[in-house]
Amino acid sequence: MEVAITKISRNGQVVIPSEVRKDAGIKPSTKFIVFNQDGNILLKQLRKESLGKDMELIEKVMRSEEQIKKGKVVKAKTTMSDADIDDLLMT
Image (cartoon, rainbow, N blue to C red; front, side, top):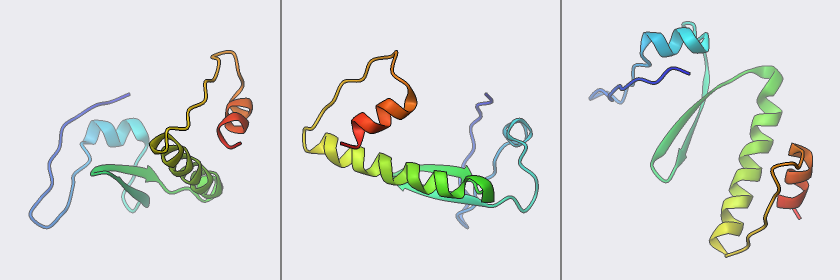
């Protein structure tokens, strides 16, 4: 995983440093989904084959965050599968 520091321009543009682009396989004209979560910005490469799963994950995260805000907490074991954890969180 590559980590780098960048800044935003006056025009609202952010440069993704070359080493990060190379590591992620980002080419010119790559499209992204842009998320704003309490001021934290996340860029996710937009890929046709994973768009449905990405949107599903966003919905799950948002529901989970709402549950946490309401004080609803569940405990998962590290031995549980991803599907079992998803089922536990979504009940």
